[in-house]
Length: 211
Image (cartoon, rainbow, N blue to C red; front, top):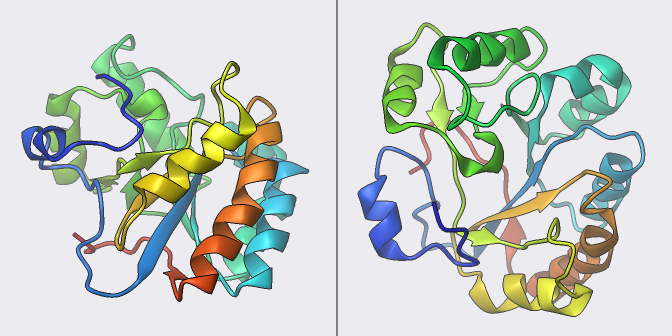
């Protein structure tokens, strides 16, 4: 899959059994954070969100939840949503199906959620269908706006502009609470919150059943 900044409609229609954005007439944005929890970066995010009474969705790696349960607990206590991001951050295109599914199940022992986001956005369509019908079951959540905070050669200002220019009501926006993305995320997130809050937007968590 090509990594678009703003995912075009034709991609969303091609993979329509995944959640790309939330259909809403309200001025709402859906901030999401992948790869945590992290003892420093997740705490920074939570502090920034609290300033605006903003809610978000954290797609957590199982082994990180096991390592930092107190950070994970704070996410829940402050009213945010969580999602499964596998236990070991596996690439769904390069991992045998059964190994991948077992890794998701292992993560579910630590992450109580019916939301799932594949690491790198890479998952086979057959697995998306299987996850939806499995015992769990899980809704595969993608995104409509990618900040590119993880991209090393991208400037902080370009990362900010990616979000400001491409977001609209119902957009699902991706940031990361990871070491790799921390510099750009810490620069961009406060400015995104301030910019859209001034324009009257709210920030909501993703709920199962939202389409």
